[in-house]
Image 1 (cartoon, helix red, strand yellow):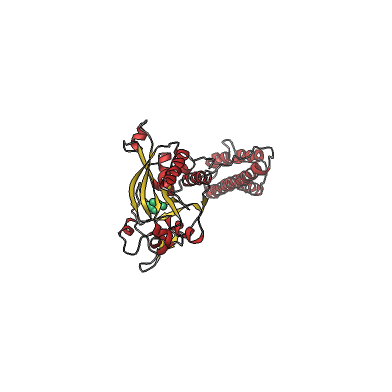
Image 2 (image 1 turned 90 degrees about the vertical axis):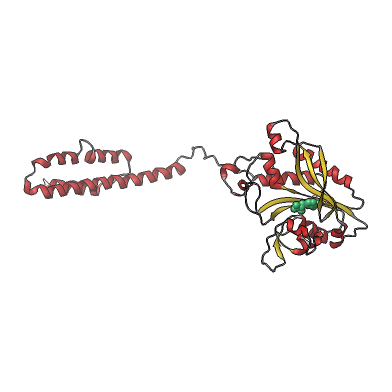
Length: 339
Ligand code: DAH
């Protein structure tokens, strides 16, 4: 009896196949309901007591050998069929490839660049790590100017002149230092402010700065340019300029675009006024021109600055600015765009 089981164990050990059917046949023969093992277990009763122990051990060994065999061959075959899935059938349709989407910040930035490039503005960039001169002093914010506090600055070291730029106006200065008028440039980029992170504000965000310098540039040119921009960007041409203050422009204004009050969303976005604030602007202060080596008696110009994140939130009705930097694919894949 035991010899018979030992022969079966060697048989099971020696078994190998590359076919699913043969493996299944093997499994049924050894481990199936009416298979060899169940038969042997059933015979256990009739085995003489003194042989029971050895008999029991032998059939248990047969059982694990057969079971291990089935498992290991099954693994091998499964792996093979996976490989064949990719390489075996060349007529198989390809796996669809997920198409990425542009980030909403890039979409808005590219649209702004496109709109201004159509009226002759080029794109310029500057460093995110700036010095005091380009971020503040040249922009008419001398050392103890109170307006410096308006922009909570990240300094690289407490005694350092170096900082993370708080606005892209620093690129104006760099551009004017290196180019002669006529100047028509926009400067998109990331800026940093030491602010608590919340749904409405972040310690970094993005701006586009605009600069136009030539002979006889007037406030009317600024207004025309802004009207062109809001028409192209939002499909709205009605704007208003509210007097404001920026150290680098004189006079200065804040620009509101008339959004309308047709829907509930319009009410919410404009807090019931119909007007939406979109940027700051003004005529470049003569001090700034002189600081940058441009003769303020010959040239004049205008500048403006707007927040890209803010416009992206408005256009897409996004309620939390933090979503723009979390890289959650479920959020990002909702933006498909030609820009
Ligand atoms: N730099 C300003 C800010 O960060 C925005 C700004 C306002 C830029 C008026 C300008 C300007 O060029 O003329 O809030």
